[in-house]
Length: 175
Image (cartoon, rainbow, N blue to C red; front, side, top):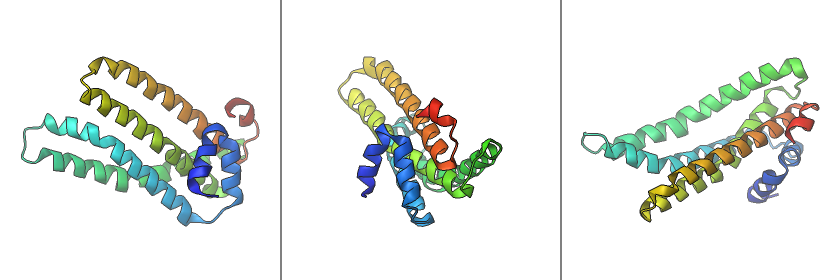
């Protein structure tokens, strides 16, 4: 199944999408590709904030410096951080019956990050559109949408993680 179709299904059925991804276990490389795609979307979504940050700096070519820092953070540090988060999450879930080693936790965390990418791009695009249209009053509404999407993403992460780790009791709470 194509990644796009799989992600589209993941928005409405995170446990089912994670079960299908686990059944089609193609190894570490596709998970790493999903992780890097998620980090790349996060980087692109951070560019409007980089522009605003650079505007407040009084140094030569501030935008290039801020973008370089965002690039380093999103494409080099964030993958390492997410690997560590997946490892710690799996270790914390082991007393509750987690299975599948660290691969399931990585798959769930990376897939959840990939699901978050388009949501981050949506919020960033709406913020840029509101600024370009001269509608600063939309900022709080966009912030509210961002928080709602964060809550949705946390639900997705919990359901995906529960499925990947075989945590049956979480089914009643998260999906």
